Length: 260
Image (cartoon, rainbow, N blue to C red; front, side):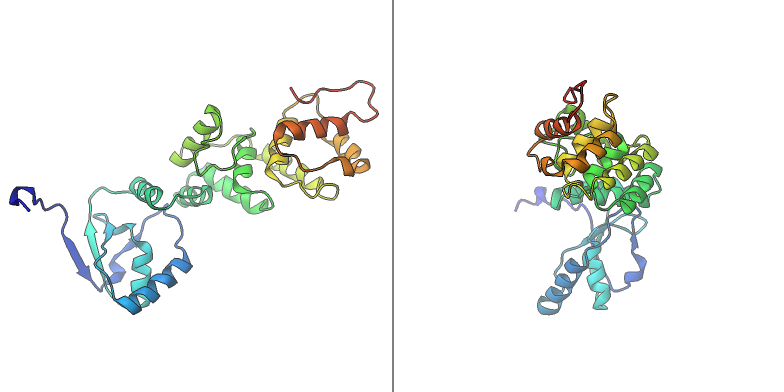
């Protein structure tokens, strides 16, 4: 290689004083299974020169699993110091290696003390029968047609993509959390009459219904009690609306259009 091409960027250090390293606030929790796999690999193959990355405060930006495996083995690590790296770089590195889930973003920002994410975490803890994406939709007080926030709503519309981006950037603020809990409690009342009450298609459809002035939830619930066989799983929100509208309008003189 031409000497002109050799540029020293960051020095690699080696240490067995592992207590000097700190976990950066906002990082996702380590995966115990991954740590066990690394411990087994290090025992069989030795510690490879695969440096962890830390900032000038010795906070781990990348390599927390390698560090924890080394601690378990009372071994050593190689490390590189890159100044001014913070949680944003942690997230970029993780997204490039293995996508963060919505739970990872929620836990990370809640750990950093961002109030809206703390509220969401509490909401999710109380309502774990619903998936995290639907909990985000409820706390945002709007439905989403996407199956995952983690993929930035690639199959969703512009509003959904923006919501996902805002959520991952840490600037999501939610909306009315008390209203979200009211909706969650109502959805749980459906459980005795429809076992698919927590499925995303139904949850997203019902969020739209809750926002519809022509829809009375308790009237729907009373009608559903007598027509449980009609409430079947729908393949999409449009079909689910039709089913709910049919149940709602049963023996109703003034039929209500709940689809628009």
